[in-house]
Image (tube, rainbow, N blue to C red):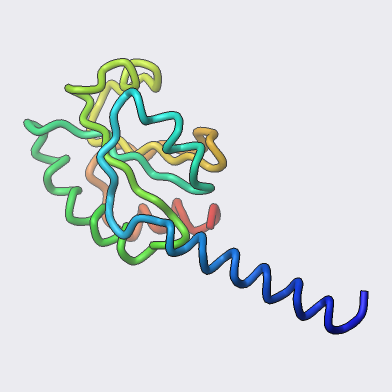
Length: 130
């Protein structure tokens, strides 16, 4: 491979990465049981916020999730799953307490963060996966 081919290949990789970042949503995506598997398979690193309307700590965590989604756009995609409306996914992942953050890497559950934790703690848990 000559120098020109190497430059072309490097540029192609840069373009692919740029395209992937543009396709990442800037905010959390509302998820349903029906769309859940497709969503976690589509992106390499996904955090799903399992919540309910009546949950006070869930409402406290929501602005943190919004901030993280904007700050980590292109690296991490965030979803929100209302466990009251999407019970089969909640049962499938044994969600017994909320808020619960499910972390998926390449479609596989790799971590759970339970409770209304500070933004810095979430970042610490996600950093090694990025």
